Image (tube, rainbow over all chains, first blue to last red; front, side):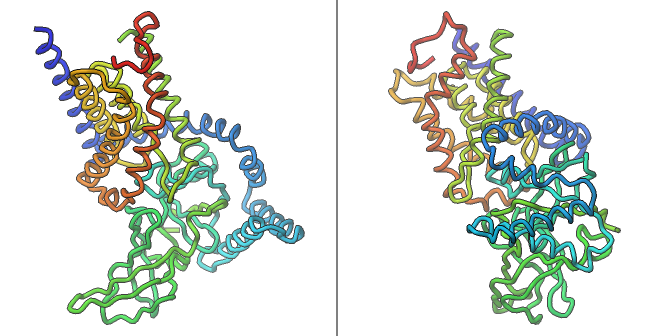
Length: 280
Length: 172
């Protein structure tokens, strides 16, 4: 008698939990409980971020040392500090490979700031504290959040170009969806102001370039930059990716084009979050 | 489950999540990291009765969902199903099997990762199937198999009052 009762209890519990999960997923997907769910996620991140930082601090004192180097207040201070770091690294002669690569990254990050398209825009410098919190998504966590006006949707730049967009922001941290993430899509231009879309295909994989008409000239090595159309998620003119392969399939309307991000997304240390509302 | 057991399980889930998002995330093989949050429902399935195991699996998944940029509730669903599945399978075994926890962690983790990818794809996250499952599944399964014995011990300590604990290594 005990066994059927136990089986019934198991079945009831399982059915209730499945229904509860499906309800939560549906509410999340349809956006009907967006305020509640994003509020819960933000609250959890706000509680967890300091704990995580504490543990990382204990386990990674070297990383903390470099984190201390990036503590800027205003835009000018950010630039000055970056430049000082570049100079310091230059003076050290970039003796080892790590320092040389750091120097290179900072120089490229500074070069991105000087893009004409970004003139007049403000940004905040940040350090990457964690890479890919899940194996299924391509994201990084940065050490700046709402306290420094980082908001959801802000474009994020790395050394040389665009790396992605802020998807969640807590008080002190933010999650950035990288270009390679399967949900990432960026409007780009190439050649004679032709437009296409760069789509992520998963971490470690090349980017897909969609909507390249078969008749349009595009070649390997060509750079793709953000198109910045009306209401676009990114300002125009930011380097995004370089074309790595172009194939024409007989009878197809579009070419099969792949590209690689201009920025090395695996070795990110410093990034910049642009304050961009889409109509700036 | 007593109030103290619930509290201990909540602490265990919180600590596992902290370990996952700090130490474990830094261990990268071919760009992939192990996932110890998957191990918690399996350990609960080996220690608790199916209904309790399912609830623990659901709770640990929901905790992970709070920090993941993925459909909210997906890990909870997978956690509940895996925990209940492991618990029902373990309960149906006619006799004790040596190394059951290691075997359950190996198989359960592999099934959990694949189930997450498939359910995610069904929910519109098609990129989940583009993830490098050929690396991810064995990596998560093997690391969780290695960690299975301590994970089951910790879960048993959290769930079972000290006087009722069976000798280490024995099933439920």
